[in-house]
Length: 267
Image (cartoon, rainbow, N blue to C red; front, side, top):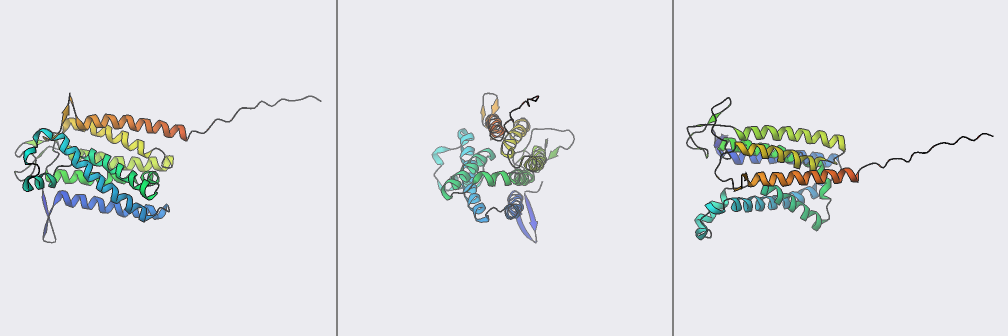
């Protein structure tokens, strides 16, 4: 694969490049949508700053939690080992939970309608996430199970994935699902005026992630009973999304008009 890409003679890590590209495209679209819907771009930047900080913290904390047994804790605070841990290892679900928490905190502190921004822009989250998964594919992280069928890939020794054996390209499958999800959320937003985009995102992405977890083979999974930590989180988010959906339907239900019978009087 291509863990490093040369751009104008400059060698860049492909994973970081894809992340930067996804964030740049998503931010440009977010700015355009904010102007169209009379949303403050200053509010967007504040929410994004809190969300990024919360997301990085949440992604790292969940990584440390699922990797608890593999971490050499007596060396944790030594400079070299600590820097090594901090440079890599992030779990998306931790970033999602931390990012949403950060955005909600920003809304409370700065009196911003976080929900309004999320409903208008949540379709950009799977779009940016798809670029990240393409970066994973190029770098070889988050790799799939051994598989020698159609579309299988074999990584060289320079990547994070096992070299020399054909494996399932689960990163690309998830990226394709995320792009489809972004399109679905756009349609849901138009049809429901943003009412059900949050719950739809939680339920659909969690379903995708739950099933694709079966085809991932990277070591840092973290298992509880027969399911990975991410699968347990997926189940919880599916339930949470369903509850939010029902609450939204109840809040926006149109009350039935009472029926009146017209009585005719004979003079």
